[in-house]
Image 1 (cartoon, rainbow, N blue to C red):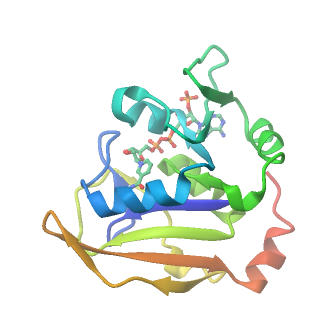
Image 2 (cartoon, rainbow, N blue to C red):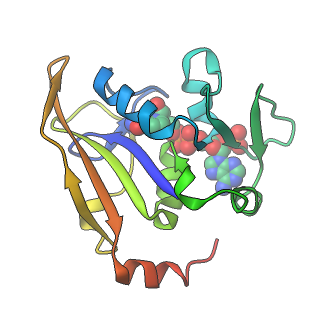
Length: 174
Ligand SMILES: NC(=O)c1ccc[n+]([C@@H]2O[C@H](COP(=O)([O-])OP(=O)(O)OC[C@H]3O[C@@H](n4cnc5c(N)ncnc54)[C@H](OP(=O)(O)O)[C@@H]3O)[C@@H](O)[C@H]2O)c1
C-alpha cells in the first residue's frame, strides 16, 4: 500500500476538516498518482471533498464505524479487519491511503511508499501526522525541485520502507 499526503514543516495536514492550502500542481500530482487506482480514506476526509463526493475514476474505500453510513459509489468498510480483507484483492502497489489524520497515523506503517508533498512553511493546522523523517523504517528515495505557488514553496518527496522496516512490518498486526 502507498500513502499520499501534503504536510507542512510541523507535519500539519488539515484544519477544520479542510486542507491547509490550495496547491494546483500538488493536486495534479495527486490525480496522476491515484487515477485508476484504489483510494482509502476516513469518513471525515470523504466529507471534506467537494460536495462530499467520492473521487472519480478511482475505486473509493471509506472507513467508518457507522453501520448505516452510505456514500454513493463508495465501498464502505467498518473495521480495520474488513478494510484489509477487502484490500487483499488488489495489488498493494495499486492502493493509496489518502487520509485523513487518523488513517495516516494508524496505517502508515503498513505502507511501503509514502508520497509526501512537503510544504516549506508552518501553517495553521489542527490535524497532524507523524514525522516520517524520524522513523528509521523509511528513507527518502527522491525529492523534486521546489515548486512555488500561491506564496508557498513545496517539494515532492518519496519515502520507501527500508529492508529493516520491511522485516519489521511482517510482524505487524492490526
Ligand atoms: N493534507 C492532506 O494531504 C490531507 C489528505 C486527507 C485529509 N486531510 C485532512 O485531514 C483532516 C481529516 O482527518 P481526521 O483524522 O479528522 O479524519 P479522517 O481520518 O478522514 O476520518 C476519521 C473517521 O474515520 C473513521 N475511522 C477512523 N478509524 C477507524 C477505524 N479504525 N474503524 C472504523 N472507522 C474508523 C471514523 O468515522 P466515523 O466517525 O464515521 O466512525 C473517524 O471519525 C481534514 O482536515 C482533511 O482536510 C489532509
